[in-house]
Image (cartoon, rainbow, N blue to C red; front, side, top):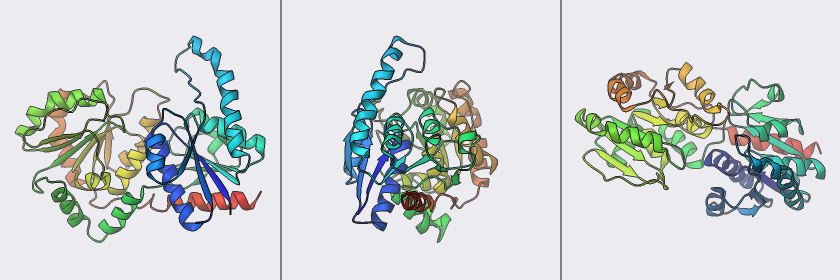
Length: 359
């Protein structure tokens, strides 16, 4: 029996791939113990226990993006976080990290404890935590080829899909056209009307929400249905006509399948799940961070399944003027989803098994 620790907290983009790998590992090794590392403020506090896995919290290293007096605390915060991580990782047989603040101290702790480590990078542009991790282990995996010297020889695995997305892909492959129509009906929309899915990430997007609000009347005049995930922290507007706002979408697989056009941030997991099930997307990358969201959608753009617009250029006027062209491109996009990420979880598990065996 082995113990596997997974580090990847904060956002759904780090947690969902980790959960997918955890499920696959548990299915292959039912006697093994799986422990997640997280912090008290991340989404892992909801998602991990709900999936039936153990979550252990460590102190968060808060690093502001701009120079700040808070940087003075970073060295001590890092030491405390590494100590807490070490107490958990020291008895593990493998650490698998997916990036985010929780991963950096876990990587350092694993190195100190001599525990094999696997790093998976989902974004086209690696974050600082995974760049650090890549210096400490030879076992590296990436979703797509990464233009980064640390990940030059990494195994290309894709991004592990949530089980409902993977299962939906397999079922839809029997008849993509029928599957898309069934999904639209199951969500309560007219299958003869185009459906736009709007989402701004796991927490929603105030910027995207405001543009949809200003565009709504004009879009409804075109007889377009809209499913709008506004985010749990944002005010839920009233439903009207063919417009249905929700705080959160539980069945994302159905939503991806049903939608003729998706307007969303281009987080790595969103791009992966859209790639598996979606038809056409307009991506509005988050304008902060290290620019990874601009790169994540590159392959989808190159294959004619998406286009990217900056948040500064995305406006109600643009959307109203462009919606007919966007829906036309959707009708010309491939009906089928992309299979490339379907076995990503299995590939990561296999690399992890190899790393454990090489200890």
